[in-house]
Length: 382
Ligand SMILES: *Cc1c(COP(=O)(O)O)cnc(C)c1O
Image (tube, rainbow, N blue to C red; front, side, top):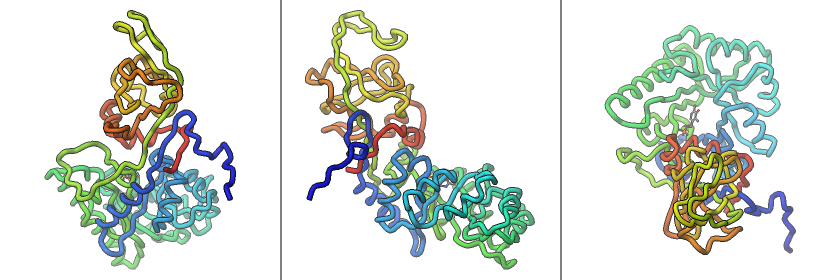
């Protein structure tokens, strides 16, 4: 029996949307798992709406693939998952305000301890809270300093903190240059020494984790109990690096597409878009696309920097990208008409535009391009 799908979740591809290739996600999970030592688990980072991909569809697919640990940035992100009935363990990597401590218990969330003063606040809440203790070994962002052993002891002595894990974060793991390798080895040593000292005193550190995506690729010897894997899961790394030795092939999970809203011809010398930035050199045909910077298309791609694919051919951005619309030059693609599909990230016949291309063209990394993709985009599983 066929059941009518309500319009709100019909995957209608009406304006601008994201297509999620779950086979690629499955491939990436298995490829990354092949790098783990026995007993080590992936703890996918599904923060920032799963790096823009959509936290709910991505997490649901990861559950089907057997994943049981997730990490997010904020209590609100953890609650979003629980409200959609996501089971398993959810670690909040970032700061949670004391006013929100009741939510940690109500939604069975595990909180990172960001320093000793914060541990005292968590403890003063007066009820048991599940935590992972973060140790700062060099990032100098979150975590109690590895050389503050007495402050760390105080964290572990907090009677209301149920310590289920201890972790650190590398900040120079994107390369294996001698300087980065030495810094990373020193971070790992500081972590192991501190954990050993605490365990020698009878404190239980729980599950240990040090690595994120680049760490797993460049320094898999530090995998321990869990690996917090973000960007690699989504099938790209932060930037293209010809020197990186990556032992696995990752497949991009996301494609970004939109509709052509309208096509029109310009006479020689006519301007288009805000600020009259673009002026037609000869007769040109422009298409208005139903996507803009509010959807996460970087405005830095304006004025010929970026391009999209339509009918398998490149169409450069002209003029300034608007909040909800973008103009492209389709003079060389005469068959384009309203309603056609433009590929912003992804493959179209023989050509492909990757998240790396957008990142390079706008002076950033793929993480930023992906995580800023707007809530307004539909997420469609293909
Ligand atoms: C986001 C984050 C990760 C995941 O990082 P990737 O480089 O995307 O794999 C891991 N650990 C911490 C603490 C993070 O904030």
